[in-house]
Image 1 (cartoon, rainbow over the protein chains, first blue to last red):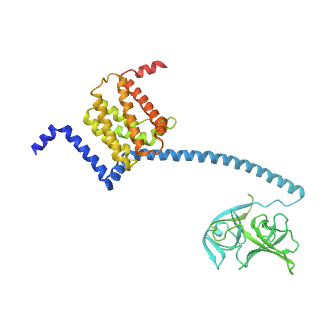
Image 2 (image 1 turned 90 degrees about the vertical axis):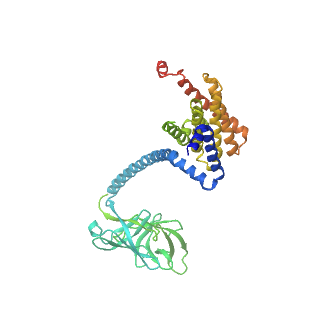
Image 3 (image 1 turned 180 degrees about the vertical axis):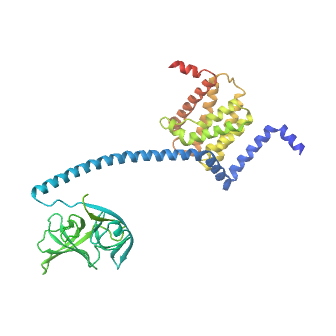
Length: 263
Length: 161
């Protein structure tokens, strides 16, 4: 052992060069695992902390850009809100001037669907709030796309919403442009139709259908559907109008129950 | 051989590769921190330090591209040992001689790496990236040498303002 130490001590320079040469050759020809392993080791030891810092800086930059964009959107939205509030006040003044009853305001109660009752098509949805949250029978239920249905049954902690696609459910509605009134109902096999519309009614594909406010359940002006197609009346005096609902009833998730009262 | 300063040099190399390189690049031209540190170590330390630091610095600098890792390692080792060899045979008192060694090593390093990795026209890369990088690295080397030789001191910098 002593002679080996003596040789290393005497030829220290060459031994070092030899070790470096061997390590280089191992890196060169031992390619399979050694090269990725040594690269990974170096990356983990020396690069990882800095790459994390770099990623965090990039994320902060993204967040700053988002923040700036959202601030702009917020400013635009608040300007729109101001304009709408002004329009609302003007509307109220004009209604008072014309002797109309003031428009009813609504508050919304957000609810989540806990089960969907189907029979080939969705009939009803059970939601996670009930009387204890202020939900009552016959309150209108909407989501951000439009009318979903009405509260049919209510218990303490949950309620059942009768959907627009329940064939026993009908909603009084009107064409937003021509203001003609009809009944929206779901016919199995046909889909959503706009019924009770006279043969000479002014309706065409793309017209927007909104609630009429008649019947006392639904407030007026809620988006219901868009006219999909219109068939010319043959012997019937009633026009056949097929609708495309605003709401996709198979993917509803979060709903809002409209509760009467000041906004 | 104290290991902590060398570890700090290695962290400086990885810091430059990940963050500093982008921040200090001018017109897409970054300075070659790896060769700058390797040459400075080779100029001011012994042969064994130059050999081993060149090896490990090559490993760290080439870790991002395992395919050419052995070539990066041997190239850095050769440049480090060569710089150390030259430093024993030239007048190190002169800043110019040290700058010539530094610039030569950066040029060789960049040319070899470019020939291994780049598919672009070599003359375009040479004039657009390599030579500006050599000049930029030499500038940093000049600043370092000026500080090291006491040509620039904090007092002198303060006196300017």
